Image (cartoon, rainbow, N blue to C red; front, top):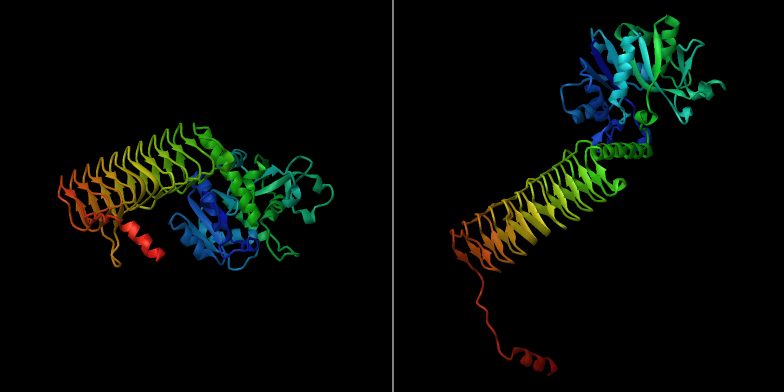
Length: 459
């Protein structure tokens, strides 16, 4: 049977105290609505409709794809009205309409899959996913009759004393046969709030003789709704723990799991060792047997097998090939590639630089807009002067070049294969292969100068 998914994302999120739409706040590197859509897409729905309010254009731009249709809820009239707004986008769809909430980033696709399986197996017109809550007053209670059939969902403010003892509550996830969407037209406006609550569709189904069921199969943390910054922080913590558990189960060692932050798009190979206070962000990929030492941040980068990333290093949108070593205190800026077995040492900064196999820049250097061959040695204090105040220019070093300490390479400049650059040189012209380039004044020693200076000072 076909499935369509409607994601309710029209909430204003006033308690977030933010100019950003609530569903666009990130949890472990992914916006909340992307988390929900990711779970929905696991079922390959025929249609996905996002219902949004005044922030519709911002949300549409953030998602940036054509796989999702949007429905506008012009006025915030509640969740029941929001689903009504999606009906025109569903068009002539026939099948199961899965309703999810855009502010529940921890939602588990396996639990939803189980709900859909039960919904279809029992041939229900309406199914609700429920769970037992530690503090049920924060949710709508699931009310059943003496036969166990679900009759309604009652909010805490409307519950009687007997109902308040119930712990089974509504998750906000529904499976509705498209033929029963007429029930939305029967939901009455709540007098206190002036809104149409989707929860009332259960009572309407009961009154109308539509077969309905509630399945208590969820875990409370899976349906944590985010309405405040505190709840956002809790959701991020829970997601982070899930990710650490996932990768630990695949052979990754965390020396202090509670201090490691991993984005949902990160992948990590077997036998990787991750030290405390490490941040792995974006779509970073880390190969097998790599070690990431403390206070490292890696953003959207590809790290090969057997790489060592030493303490207090930042790697951004770059590639570190197999067996390379980077850090400590190194900064690899976007667009760099560090070749196999290469070494980038302490206080070295790379920017749009390609470092060849087994080349070394061990300390205190800046290499920007540079292409460096194999087996090159970069002495301490070397700088590629790549900016002339108007444009950036490139520096090219051939294989086997030796660059002495405290050298300035003024781009555009090329140094041929196997050439040597004397320490303290400023290179402004191309250097032929196998040549020695020196540009510094001859040393002059003035005998007795110190004694004469002291005499002048005393006088």
